[in-house]
Length: 69
Image (tube, rainbow, N blue to C red):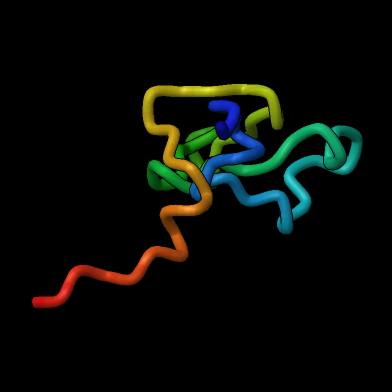
């Protein structure tokens, strides 16, 4: 059984360095589009590996074949 946590979600990106100080404990959530941080730039939300939200989708789903049309 997969634990519902960002680290196990298909939308979690730990390949991009989210923050130099917390890079080992954090990543980026790629579910929603980037949000403005300071009114000038946009950024993906930084989340901890143990965080969880209602959009969780197990990483395994990413490798399932698409339904035939």
